[in-house]
Image 1 (tube, rainbow, N blue to C red):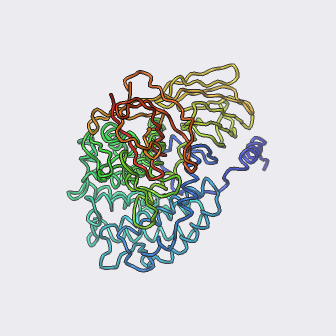
Image 2 (cartoon, rainbow, N blue to C red):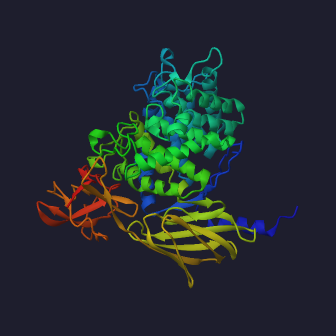
Image 3 (cartoon, one colour):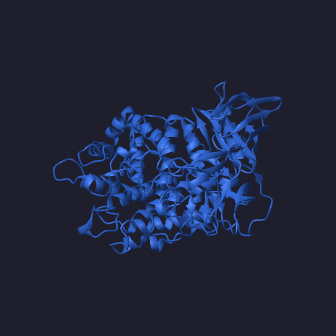
Length: 611
């Protein structure tokens, strides 16, 4: 058989252009989704710059320091020391697998290999992978732990092809299917955990994945049972509640993390079946959260629950911004982005990543805060087995490569501004297949410019999309003698003949916005520069107690890049001098991104007084 020369050239181009990029083989599900993704993340990429710096912190200072003895202790000697100890192995495997997929780092692979081997050895013959004694099976967080067991094992299988991991996930899934259901003699899933069935019902997500990876329809049948159980009198009534009220506060008991986890499973079921009834209510839920329950830093929840419209207190005492909610909100937006291709979900992902997600992990230590307040001290902790959020924040950070570059309806799209290299294949306007490499160079978020080197495997005409953030002003893209203007909150499509090493320069202004304190902080304001909310770190402003912003009503509030010296061990030295009133006298105060504030244990202030 004669191999077409075009195919050979594409393979050579992919090899030569992506020789330094990840070559890990992925083991895909065997059952395709009926609903095809409109956004598909780029497979081969490297990320540098600000996002790369925080991803490296997550790898070096968090994931690689995970102690398998702690994570596996409750499986080796049941019962575990803490009721949700069982979730941490699955969460780690999720983070480790995603990180390995994009970095090809042998260290994280070895750690994951060792943990999986020991984890599987702890599975009981009937498939049980919890940390309870038999008398307490299927109470509290037992089903929940099995959810994360299956998620972690399937993610590990997807990057290794380890059949033992897949078999262990199936055994755990079989046990759940054999235990729960609406047939005579089976238990009611809605009573097997907390929060009106939201916690145990969230096992819908891995059951949908098990069906796709195994092809066994019993898992799909179990998904349908869960959806029926949700609507029982003792269930959270997710779909009917959202159809009737359009408010997440009317679903179950309003528990944010567990509810969002159920949303992820419902969306996966929708993609398998195409049943539109399961998409529309979740789009309403997204709109409700964005409009009424989302903090300026891209998180939600007070005391772990969704609150009434506009109620968003932000002190330590409020237990606001649970890390698990932050990560699952990011996952929810990513799934909606994949399903619809609508870049408005990228806007929310950007808000979350640049603010609350990174704020919850200390860049100096890799320690994580369970709740990350906008006002007060970030309560970072370094333990590994006693806090759900200390396992969840690394999961969110591990997902960053899925949201930076990809294809929207087949058109290669730059969804977030970052330095790095990405390689993919696209279809040109003449229907030929082209291997494409894009090298991006930028100092963003310090500066509003990006240089892209565009290298197709052959000169050809095709389009590229550039997401223009909602906050960007005067966005222009120049290649050769041609300039293109982008509109804030849209995709700029540049369709032209591209040749090897074409240079495209993007420039945009990063404005400073004044945000109102709303119902919870009337008379106060916060500052946001581009996607980043700013905060006062009192470690950097000694002797400052009470602050008021001068001239905050000015149309163009001016802040000045901080040229002074940070402490020698301060990570990511980005700061701005802002005119304030201190003790009734004008003074310049140093403000830093909320994501970086509090890293040395100092008190921070995001909502500040205004004259």
